[in-house]
Amino acid sequence: MKNKIISFLLAVAVLMSSYYPALATGDGNVDSGSGGMGVGTENYHWSPGNDGVRITVIDAATGAPVGRPQDYTNIIPPAGMSYFDHKTKIEYLNGASLTLRYGDYAYKNPVPPLPRIVSDSTGNANLEAIKQYFCSEGAALMVSNDFGINFDMLTNGDYKLFIEPIAYFKYAGFNVGMTAHEAALYDTELGGAMRSYMTSLTHQNLPLSMFLERPDLGLPAYSGVSTGWQTNATIITYLGMGIISYTDVEYEEEDNVEYTIEYRPNTEVITAVTLSSSAEINYHSSATVTFHILGRAYNMSGVVMPAGGSQIVWCKWTTPATEQMVTISVATNKGVLSENQVAAKIVPLDENPPPDPKADDRNDTFSPVSSPINPERKSASWSVWWARWHENWQWVEDWQWVADVRWISNLVYIDGAGFVDYGYYYDFGQWFDFGEWQDLGWWDFFTANYHANLAAVSTIAPDEKVPTAVGSLMKSGYGINNTVTANIDSIQVEIDSHVTGAQTAVSYFPEFGYTTYWRLLDLTSRGRSSRLELKYNPFSTYNRRVHFTPVWYPNGRYDVYTWVLDAWTPVGMLSVNLTSGVSIEQSVFDDWYTNRE
Image 1 (cartoon, rainbow, N blue to C red):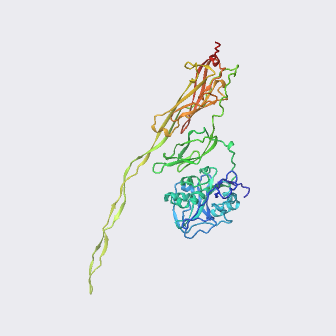
Image 2: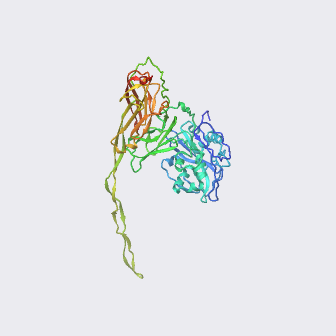
Image 3: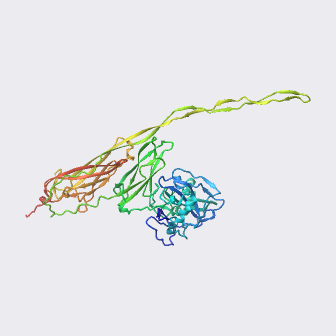
């Protein structure tokens, strides 16, 4: 293909019964799954091989379809088949509705024939065969000819192929053909009836036959289970689609992937992008922004703005418990997003706890240093558009002629015939205004302004097991507690849906120069008013939430530096630096004594 390299963005799930060994998966962008087909009936039945694909050429820059989709299949569909208008999943996601048709189904029989697309319990689709077919020069030439697009233009990177699996089957005694997305939409309209009869086909093997392994064209990758029945929502959002790019696309390994934002594990966070629109978006047809994260969809709906406006849009979600990269795909039904993808890196902070202190530890050269200052942001402000209808009632004329046709007699005497009426009809009608008062108003737009402040306090105190502590005065070698209380303050009642409380605190200690080692605090009370305490110390005899001061620490101040963070808002994270401590005088050895009596 003139040395062009095809990067395959299509993850194909091969569905097989437990009686067949799993086939080897393809390259890193191909996945597989499993599932049996069950038993059909005369009126509800699918035969293996009765499948195909819908191909749509997509403008890579805009994500818009180029021309109409075309269906390809190896079979001759029944003449009296019911089907839906040829629309792509992208159009349905943008609000298109199902339009049912009967007969005159347009399709093409490709040469060479398609490989098997949808598996059943006795015949498995072949990952490599599907991949090689759609990535071949022959497939590109076929699409070029059928869509009337110059081959070089089709394969120079300006276009992508959007592929959807199709199944032809009998439902309620009728021959039907539909994509996975159409089946999910139709099942939603039927209240689940299709899933009840055709579960293994329409809600398992068909949708799982293709899904994206990497986000593309603003559509999310699928990382959920690739076996078992799927919900309509999952199918509509994630399944039954593949994308082929005719350019050399290189993907870095995960360790080298650049990330946009950094989060901590198992933390409630807010991910935000900006939505802009050159046209007015109002409540008659508001915008919905969808964030696709780890197999779930988070919607922010009811977004409005004036023409030329923009605002932050966001979702609140909880990060996974382990270190990893998370790709967040963002899509909207209206307007333009500042980003369609956010790469988040989940980084734990509990990997450098201090070592077990010893009674014979020494540091004769210790010299105290000033506590550090991490990035700090104690307040944030943002705004959200809202609109109010401005009434403008006007009389809208609707003039119509109301006929009043009457016969006008004109009697004329005719010899031999007598009087003959040579009359005529005349319309005495009038014009009447059937107009009405109409509200020709408009939307007035306003901003709701939000503000949040983070305040926190770190309380360092001798542990209650310290026998000789007096207030904040203690001897070195004993344990201290650190209790952090944090509060997000705002005057807006609805702010809870916009922010999270502070959820992370990390304490650094003077004996390590506030570097090298640190302790991560536990979140013991969650919410806008949160509480964090030191984790249980594995070196504590009594399993206390303590940090042991070194026995060699000199008399004077022992200040602990704590960075409080992960208080999230739509415009970023709030954090604060805290320093608090105790006074050291003498050491634990001064509490020892010998009784010789």
